[in-house]
Length: 115
Length: 112
Image 1 (cartoon, each protein chain N blue to C red):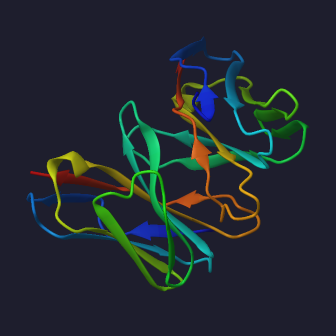
Image 2 (cartoon, helix red, strand yellow; image 1 turned 60 degrees about the vertical axis):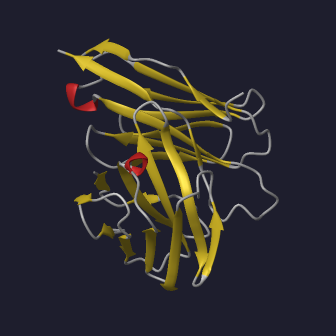
């Protein structure tokens, strides 16, 4: 079983719709959760970080974390063609304090927003 | 703003050559990481470092070594480049807390 799994995609939504990206993780003790966006040929850039259960909103982006279900999601409201990219979920696993910030990444979900 | 820079955007090397990839961060981050990214395989951690002269193997360290002589600089070394090391190489850095990783622009390495 993969440690961090994302919905396989690709995901295609019309402009203005809500895009929903999902991620599950295997380590119940995981502490920190991140969403990165990666445009083709570019490096990942951070969109959101979330550490506590519940929702965290930043502009059109909302991250949702449910530690009991081991589930983290990213909602993009009013999707724009410029949101078309690969979205990576990353999780800091519980390594007893010796993880040194090491993250485990999902495979990524390709999102296409069409006009 | 955090800035992570990598020595080259594109690099072409011959099989058997020794290759150095350099990464520099300007935010006094403790942790630094080297990944490779290949289609269908995602981001895979090669090595990371949590302090000067300290290093830890990641998931795929074979064929690579690293050096961290100064806090801001983390080098990835391919001792004898092979064609299966053709890839995009990404460097990242983070503080101990918070642990958000920031990525450099990447080096696309081709080994012929």
